[in-house]
Image (cartoon, rainbow, N blue to C red; front, side, top):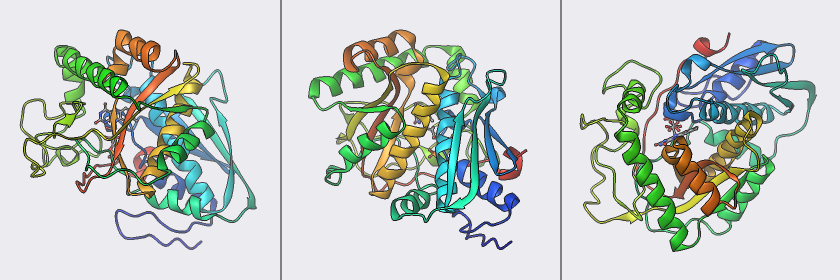
Length: 340
Ligand SMILES: Cc1cc2nc3c(=O)[nH]c(=O)nc-3n(C[C@H](O)[C@H](O)[C@H](O)COP(=O)(O)O)c2cc1C
Protein backbone atom coordinates (compact mmCIF):
# COMPACT_ATOMS: atom_id res chain seq x y z
CA UNK A 1 0.00 0.00 0.00
CA UNK A 2 2.99 2.22 -0.30
CA UNK A 3 2.80 5.06 -2.79
CA UNK A 4 5.61 7.53 -3.02
CA UNK A 5 4.26 10.71 -4.64
CA UNK A 6 7.12 12.41 -6.36
CA UNK A 7 7.49 16.23 -6.35
CA UNK A 8 4.99 18.07 -8.51
CA UNK A 9 5.59 17.76 -12.24
CA UNK A 10 6.94 14.26 -11.82
CA UNK A 11 5.15 10.96 -11.64
CA UNK A 12 4.75 8.68 -8.64
CA UNK A 13 7.33 5.90 -8.56
CA UNK A 14 5.42 3.05 -6.92
CA UNK A 15 1.97 1.54 -6.61
CA UNK A 16 0.81 -1.78 -5.22
CA UNK A 17 -2.95 -2.02 -4.48
CA UNK A 18 -5.31 -2.23 -7.52
CA UNK A 19 -6.56 1.32 -6.77
CA UNK A 20 -3.04 2.69 -6.60
CA UNK A 21 -2.08 0.91 -9.81
CA UNK A 22 -5.08 2.36 -11.71
CA UNK A 23 -4.35 5.83 -10.42
CA UNK A 24 -0.67 5.47 -11.25
CA UNK A 25 -1.49 4.41 -14.82
CA UNK A 26 -3.99 7.23 -15.39
CA UNK A 27 -1.66 9.79 -13.79
CA UNK A 28 0.86 8.89 -16.51
CA UNK A 29 -1.65 8.53 -19.37
CA UNK A 30 -3.01 12.07 -19.04
CA UNK A 31 0.41 13.43 -20.00
CA UNK A 32 -0.13 12.17 -23.57
CA UNK A 33 -0.35 14.75 -26.36
CA UNK A 34 -3.82 15.50 -27.72
CA UNK A 35 -5.18 17.69 -30.48
CA UNK A 36 -5.45 21.28 -29.14
CA UNK A 37 -4.91 19.71 -25.71
CA UNK A 38 -8.57 18.68 -25.71
CA UNK A 39 -7.64 15.60 -23.62
CA UNK A 40 -10.55 13.73 -25.22
CA UNK A 41 -10.44 10.77 -22.84
CA UNK A 42 -11.68 9.26 -19.63
CA UNK A 43 -10.67 6.07 -17.87
CA UNK A 44 -12.42 3.30 -15.97
CA UNK A 45 -11.00 0.42 -13.99
CA UNK A 46 -11.96 -3.18 -13.36
CA UNK A 47 -10.34 -6.27 -11.96
CA UNK A 48 -6.71 -6.07 -13.16
CA UNK A 49 -7.89 -3.83 -15.95
CA UNK A 50 -7.79 -0.18 -17.02
CA UNK A 51 -9.97 1.02 -19.93
CA UNK A 52 -9.44 4.08 -22.12
CA UNK A 53 -12.61 5.77 -23.42
CA UNK A 54 -12.99 8.56 -25.98
CA UNK A 55 -14.83 11.59 -24.58
CA UNK A 56 -16.80 12.57 -27.67
CA UNK A 57 -17.98 15.81 -26.05
CA UNK A 58 -14.38 16.97 -26.45
CA UNK A 59 -14.09 16.09 -30.14
CA UNK A 60 -13.47 19.04 -32.49
CA UNK A 61 -16.76 18.93 -34.37
CA UNK A 62 -15.60 21.04 -37.31
CA UNK A 63 -11.90 20.18 -37.60
CA UNK A 64 -12.32 16.51 -36.73
CA UNK A 65 -15.78 15.34 -37.87
CA UNK A 66 -14.83 11.64 -38.00
CA UNK A 67 -13.01 11.64 -34.67
CA UNK A 68 -9.69 10.69 -36.28
CA UNK A 69 -7.63 13.15 -34.23
CA UNK A 70 -9.62 12.26 -31.12
CA UNK A 71 -8.70 8.59 -31.61
CA UNK A 72 -5.03 9.44 -32.28
CA UNK A 73 -5.01 11.36 -28.99
CA UNK A 74 -6.60 8.41 -27.15
CA UNK A 75 -4.06 6.07 -28.79
CA UNK A 76 -1.26 8.23 -27.37
CA UNK A 77 -2.86 7.95 -23.91
CA UNK A 78 -3.18 4.18 -24.38
CA UNK A 79 0.52 3.80 -25.19
CA UNK A 80 1.42 5.92 -22.16
CA UNK A 81 -0.74 3.68 -19.96
CA UNK A 82 1.15 0.66 -21.33
CA UNK A 83 4.48 2.31 -20.50
CA UNK A 84 3.29 2.97 -16.93
CA UNK A 85 2.25 -0.68 -16.47
CA UNK A 86 5.59 -1.87 -17.83
CA UNK A 87 7.35 0.53 -15.47
CA UNK A 88 5.61 -1.30 -12.61
CA UNK A 89 6.69 -4.62 -14.14
CA UNK A 90 3.24 -5.72 -15.37
CA UNK A 91 2.66 -7.21 -18.81
CA UNK A 92 -0.19 -5.25 -20.43
CA UNK A 93 -2.63 -7.15 -22.66
CA UNK A 94 -4.34 -4.66 -24.94
CA UNK A 95 -7.65 -5.09 -26.78
CA UNK A 96 -8.24 -2.17 -29.11
CA UNK A 97 -11.92 -1.31 -29.76
CA UNK A 98 -12.96 -4.55 -28.05
CA UNK A 99 -16.75 -4.04 -28.27
CA UNK A 100 -18.44 -3.08 -31.57
CA UNK A 101 -21.45 -1.87 -29.55
CA UNK A 102 -19.24 0.56 -27.64
CA UNK A 103 -17.32 2.51 -30.31
CA UNK A 104 -15.99 4.98 -27.74
CA UNK A 105 -14.35 2.23 -25.67
CA UNK A 106 -10.91 2.73 -27.21
CA UNK A 107 -9.10 -0.07 -25.42
CA UNK A 108 -9.14 -2.45 -22.49
CA UNK A 109 -5.73 -2.98 -20.95
CA UNK A 110 -5.53 -6.08 -18.80
CA UNK A 111 -2.57 -6.93 -16.60
CA UNK A 112 -2.08 -10.19 -14.77
CA UNK A 113 -0.36 -10.70 -11.45
CA UNK A 114 2.73 -12.04 -13.26
CA UNK A 115 5.44 -9.46 -13.50
CA UNK A 116 8.60 -9.32 -15.60
CA UNK A 117 11.52 -7.05 -14.76
CA UNK A 118 11.46 -3.60 -16.35
CA UNK A 119 14.33 -2.99 -18.75
CA UNK A 120 16.28 0.28 -19.09
CA UNK A 121 14.50 1.24 -22.30
CA UNK A 122 11.09 1.06 -20.55
CA UNK A 123 12.34 3.09 -17.59
CA UNK A 124 13.67 5.71 -20.01
CA UNK A 125 10.34 6.02 -21.82
CA UNK A 126 8.51 6.33 -18.50
CA UNK A 127 10.86 9.09 -17.36
CA UNK A 128 10.04 11.09 -20.50
CA UNK A 129 6.26 10.93 -20.00
CA UNK A 130 6.03 14.16 -17.92
CA UNK A 131 9.08 15.79 -19.61
CA UNK A 132 8.03 15.53 -23.26
CA UNK A 133 6.44 18.71 -24.65
CA UNK A 134 5.28 19.81 -28.08
CA UNK A 135 7.58 22.42 -29.62
CA UNK A 136 6.33 25.20 -31.87
CA UNK A 137 8.85 26.95 -34.10
CA UNK A 138 12.34 26.29 -35.42
CA UNK A 139 15.17 24.07 -34.22
CA UNK A 140 18.89 24.49 -33.52
CA UNK A 141 21.24 23.72 -36.39
CA UNK A 142 22.78 20.64 -34.67
CA UNK A 143 21.96 17.28 -36.25
CA UNK A 144 20.02 14.66 -34.29
CA UNK A 145 22.05 11.93 -32.56
CA UNK A 146 23.33 9.27 -34.98
CA UNK A 147 20.98 6.34 -35.36
CA UNK A 148 18.00 8.11 -33.80
CA UNK A 149 15.94 8.37 -36.98
CA UNK A 150 16.25 4.70 -37.78
CA UNK A 151 15.35 3.84 -34.15
CA UNK A 152 12.26 6.06 -34.40
CA UNK A 153 11.19 4.35 -37.60
CA UNK A 154 11.46 1.00 -35.81
CA UNK A 155 9.36 2.35 -32.92
CA UNK A 156 6.58 3.42 -35.30
CA UNK A 157 6.54 0.09 -37.12
CA UNK A 158 6.10 -1.76 -33.80
CA UNK A 159 2.69 -0.04 -33.57
CA UNK A 160 1.72 -0.85 -37.20
CA UNK A 161 2.54 2.63 -38.50
CA UNK A 162 5.27 4.02 -40.75
CA UNK A 163 7.41 7.07 -40.08
CA UNK A 164 8.28 8.36 -43.56
CA UNK A 165 11.21 10.74 -43.61
CA UNK A 166 10.98 13.52 -46.18
CA UNK A 167 14.67 13.39 -47.03
CA UNK A 168 14.73 15.29 -50.31
CA UNK A 169 14.52 19.07 -50.50
CA UNK A 170 11.64 18.78 -52.97
CA UNK A 171 9.60 16.64 -50.55
CA UNK A 172 10.30 18.96 -47.62
CA UNK A 173 9.39 22.00 -49.71
CA UNK A 174 6.18 20.40 -51.00
CA UNK A 175 5.09 19.37 -47.51
CA UNK A 176 5.87 22.82 -46.09
CA UNK A 177 3.83 24.42 -48.88
CA UNK A 178 0.86 22.16 -48.06
CA UNK A 179 1.07 23.00 -44.33
CA UNK A 180 1.17 26.69 -45.25
CA UNK A 181 -1.79 26.38 -47.63
CA UNK A 182 -3.78 24.54 -44.94
CA UNK A 183 -2.92 27.15 -42.34
CA UNK A 184 -4.17 29.94 -44.62
CA UNK A 185 -7.33 27.97 -45.42
CA UNK A 186 -8.06 27.38 -41.72
CA UNK A 187 -7.51 31.06 -40.86
CA UNK A 188 -10.05 32.02 -43.55
CA UNK A 189 -12.71 29.71 -42.11
CA UNK A 190 -14.51 31.64 -39.36
CA UNK A 191 -16.14 28.55 -37.83
CA UNK A 192 -12.78 26.79 -37.51
CA UNK A 193 -11.12 29.87 -36.06
CA UNK A 194 -13.90 30.04 -33.44
CA UNK A 195 -13.51 26.35 -32.65
CA UNK A 196 -9.74 26.61 -32.24
CA UNK A 197 -9.99 29.74 -30.10
CA UNK A 198 -12.27 27.85 -27.69
CA UNK A 199 -9.22 25.64 -27.00
CA UNK A 200 -6.78 28.54 -26.60
CA UNK A 201 -7.39 30.11 -23.18
CA UNK A 202 -5.98 33.58 -22.38
CA UNK A 203 -2.97 34.21 -20.09
CA UNK A 204 -3.71 33.47 -16.46
CA UNK A 205 -6.70 31.23 -17.20
CA UNK A 206 -7.33 28.59 -14.50
CA UNK A 207 -8.32 26.08 -17.18
CA UNK A 208 -6.50 22.76 -17.25
CA UNK A 209 -7.12 22.02 -20.92
CA UNK A 210 -6.55 23.82 -24.21
CA UNK A 211 -3.25 25.28 -25.38
CA UNK A 212 -2.10 27.97 -22.90
CA UNK A 213 0.09 30.94 -23.94
CA UNK A 214 2.98 29.32 -22.03
CA UNK A 215 3.01 26.61 -24.73
CA UNK A 216 3.73 28.71 -27.83
CA UNK A 217 5.91 31.67 -28.84
CA UNK A 218 4.31 35.08 -29.30
CA UNK A 219 6.25 35.40 -32.55
CA UNK A 220 7.10 31.96 -33.94
CA UNK A 221 10.51 31.64 -35.63
CA UNK A 222 10.53 31.43 -39.35
CA UNK A 223 11.82 28.05 -40.47
CA UNK A 224 13.46 27.12 -43.73
CA UNK A 225 11.34 25.80 -45.45
CA UNK A 226 8.47 27.56 -43.68
CA UNK A 227 6.18 25.37 -41.53
CA UNK A 228 3.75 27.81 -39.90
CA UNK A 229 2.42 27.07 -36.42
CA UNK A 230 -1.27 27.27 -35.63
CA UNK A 231 -2.41 30.73 -34.54
CA UNK A 232 -3.45 29.91 -30.97
CA UNK A 233 -3.18 33.58 -29.90
CA UNK A 234 -5.71 34.57 -32.60
CA UNK A 235 -4.38 38.10 -32.89
CA UNK A 236 -4.03 38.87 -29.15
CA UNK A 237 -0.23 38.78 -29.10
CA UNK A 238 -0.20 36.13 -26.34
CA UNK A 239 2.68 33.69 -26.03
CA UNK A 240 6.22 33.27 -24.78
CA UNK A 241 8.73 36.10 -25.36
CA UNK A 242 10.90 35.87 -28.50
CA UNK A 243 13.82 33.45 -28.34
CA UNK A 244 16.24 36.23 -29.36
CA UNK A 245 17.06 34.62 -32.70
CA UNK A 246 15.74 37.63 -34.62
CA UNK A 247 14.85 37.31 -38.27
CA UNK A 248 17.31 34.56 -39.20
CA UNK A 249 15.34 31.49 -40.31
CA UNK A 250 15.90 28.46 -38.12
CA UNK A 251 16.05 24.82 -39.14
CA UNK A 252 12.76 23.03 -39.80
CA UNK A 253 14.47 19.90 -38.44
CA UNK A 254 13.97 16.38 -39.73
CA UNK A 255 10.58 16.34 -41.41
CA UNK A 256 8.44 13.19 -41.45
CA UNK A 257 4.90 11.97 -42.02
CA UNK A 258 3.44 9.23 -39.83
CA UNK A 259 1.20 6.99 -41.95
CA UNK A 260 -0.94 3.87 -41.65
CA UNK A 261 -1.89 1.40 -44.37
CA UNK A 262 -5.65 1.76 -43.72
CA UNK A 263 -7.81 4.51 -42.27
CA UNK A 264 -10.22 2.95 -39.78
CA UNK A 265 -10.61 3.84 -36.10
CA UNK A 266 -8.18 1.08 -35.04
CA UNK A 267 -5.58 2.52 -37.44
CA UNK A 268 -6.04 5.92 -35.80
CA UNK A 269 -5.55 4.40 -32.34
CA UNK A 270 -2.39 2.66 -33.56
CA UNK A 271 -1.18 5.91 -35.12
CA UNK A 272 -1.57 7.55 -31.71
CA UNK A 273 0.37 4.75 -30.03
CA UNK A 274 3.11 5.03 -32.65
CA UNK A 275 3.19 8.81 -32.28
CA UNK A 276 3.68 8.71 -28.53
CA UNK A 277 6.25 5.91 -28.85
CA UNK A 278 8.25 8.03 -31.32
CA UNK A 279 7.89 11.19 -29.21
CA UNK A 280 9.00 9.52 -25.97
CA UNK A 281 12.06 7.89 -27.52
CA UNK A 282 12.99 11.14 -29.28
CA UNK A 283 12.64 12.99 -25.98
CA UNK A 284 14.88 10.46 -24.22
CA UNK A 285 17.59 11.32 -26.79
CA UNK A 286 17.29 15.05 -26.18
CA UNK A 287 15.18 15.71 -29.30
CA UNK A 288 11.83 17.43 -29.37
CA UNK A 289 8.99 17.44 -31.89
CA UNK A 290 6.70 19.94 -33.56
CA UNK A 291 3.38 18.55 -34.81
CA UNK A 292 1.33 19.86 -37.71
CA UNK A 293 -2.12 18.48 -38.30
CA UNK A 294 -3.46 21.53 -40.20
CA UNK A 295 -3.21 19.90 -43.68
CA UNK A 296 -4.68 16.63 -42.45
CA UNK A 297 -7.89 18.45 -41.48
CA UNK A 298 -8.46 19.50 -45.11
CA UNK A 299 -9.59 16.50 -47.16
CA UNK A 300 -8.03 17.60 -50.45
CA UNK A 301 -4.66 18.43 -48.88
CA UNK A 302 -4.60 15.16 -46.95
CA UNK A 303 -5.26 13.38 -50.25
CA UNK A 304 -2.40 15.29 -51.89
CA UNK A 305 0.05 14.31 -49.13
CA UNK A 306 -1.07 10.67 -49.38
CA UNK A 307 -0.76 10.49 -53.16
CA UNK A 308 2.34 12.58 -53.77
CA UNK A 309 4.48 12.08 -50.65
CA UNK A 310 3.34 8.83 -49.01
CA UNK A 311 2.85 6.26 -51.82
CA UNK A 312 -0.90 6.24 -51.17
CA UNK A 313 -0.62 5.41 -47.44
CA UNK A 314 -2.85 7.39 -45.06
CA UNK A 315 -1.11 10.36 -43.42
CA UNK A 316 -1.97 10.68 -39.72
CA UNK A 317 0.52 13.32 -38.53
CA UNK A 318 3.21 15.65 -39.87
CA UNK A 319 6.14 15.59 -37.44
CA UNK A 320 9.29 17.75 -37.33
CA UNK A 321 12.11 16.62 -35.05
CA UNK A 322 15.10 18.57 -33.79
CA UNK A 323 16.77 20.04 -30.75
CA UNK A 324 15.99 23.32 -29.04
CA UNK A 325 16.65 25.01 -25.71
CA UNK A 326 13.19 26.61 -25.68
CA UNK A 327 10.81 25.19 -23.10
CA UNK A 328 7.04 25.22 -23.24
CA UNK A 329 4.62 24.54 -20.38
CA UNK A 330 1.31 22.79 -20.87
CA UNK A 331 -1.60 21.93 -18.54
CA UNK A 332 -3.62 18.79 -17.74
CA UNK A 333 -6.85 17.97 -15.98
CA UNK A 334 -6.54 16.19 -12.64
CA UNK A 335 -6.78 12.42 -12.43
CA UNK A 336 -10.00 12.72 -10.37
CA UNK A 337 -11.67 14.47 -13.31
CA UNK A 338 -10.93 11.67 -15.78
CA UNK A 339 -10.84 8.45 -13.71
CA UNK A 340 -14.46 7.48 -13.27
C1 LIG B 1 -3.86 14.44 -33.12
C2 LIG B 1 -2.98 15.60 -32.68
C3 LIG B 1 -2.89 16.73 -33.49
C4 LIG B 1 -2.06 17.81 -33.11
N1 LIG B 1 -1.92 18.88 -33.96
C5 LIG B 1 -1.11 19.90 -33.61
C6 LIG B 1 -0.91 21.03 -34.49
O1 LIG B 1 -1.43 21.08 -35.61
N2 LIG B 1 -0.12 22.05 -34.07
C7 LIG B 1 0.49 22.02 -32.84
O2 LIG B 1 1.20 22.98 -32.50
N3 LIG B 1 0.35 20.97 -32.00
C8 LIG B 1 -0.43 19.92 -32.36
N4 LIG B 1 -0.60 18.85 -31.51
C9 LIG B 1 0.05 18.89 -30.18
C10 LIG B 1 -0.95 19.34 -29.11
O3 LIG B 1 -1.31 20.68 -29.27
C11 LIG B 1 -0.29 19.09 -27.73
O4 LIG B 1 -0.08 17.72 -27.56
C12 LIG B 1 -1.16 19.61 -26.58
O5 LIG B 1 -1.29 21.00 -26.64
C13 LIG B 1 -0.55 19.22 -25.21
O6 LIG B 1 0.74 19.78 -25.06
P1 LIG B 1 2.05 18.91 -24.88
O7 LIG B 1 2.16 17.98 -26.06
O8 LIG B 1 3.17 19.92 -24.86
O9 LIG B 1 1.94 18.15 -23.61
C14 LIG B 1 -1.37 17.75 -31.89
C15 LIG B 1 -1.46 16.60 -31.08
C16 LIG B 1 -2.24 15.53 -31.48
C17 LIG B 1 -2.29 14.29 -30.63
